[in-house]
Image (cartoon, rainbow, N blue to C red; front, side):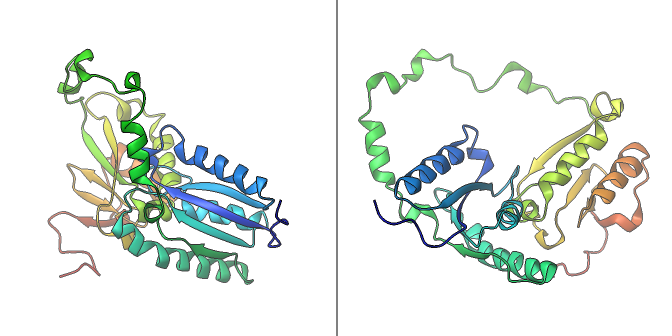
Length: 267
Ligand code: FES
């Protein structure tokens, strides 16, 4: 067996999309990777982070690793195929995280390295080959399944008064959108009329809504009101002032459709 890794406190973070992680694929991969490293005598912990929809988001995972004494974290994007927009944004976002930590703690932050996305190294062709040649009983004949384009209930539009679009795209998630969405749902929960009936607010988590630099953000329709730079306090004011009281706080509004574009918007 090779000698143990001389670098203490190293970690690997597998960074993937929550939408494709229902079966905890990332966690399974992480466990297998950790075991393989252990067998080779390396002391490295393996964590997972999500790029969108739900946490844990990368900043939270990195902060936790740093708190636990990890000196260097290697982030490996595990989205196949890789998302070019995410790949272009991620280096700067990680650098920003590092600089912010340095400012906050006053000390040298944990070193963060970024690997190329796994698609370049993954044996996709081999995996597809193995599936295609797999046992016939695992290759389902669709004629044995009831034809359907959707469940019967999916034809009705649920009763509601407003729709709330809450961005959980990669950049908003990086800025804490997951915890803020939980805050929103918790603040709405005790109010019966926000959850059923004609005043119901249908909350929909979305991917990028575009003004990422003003994120995390949400939009309330049909009022066409945008709220940006969300904080827990702002979320509470949206629920109590706008959704319950029908009186949004003008100081919180980033933009209303029909108004002049917000400052900083591209021409
Ligand atoms: S990721 Fe939320 S606005 Fe772009």
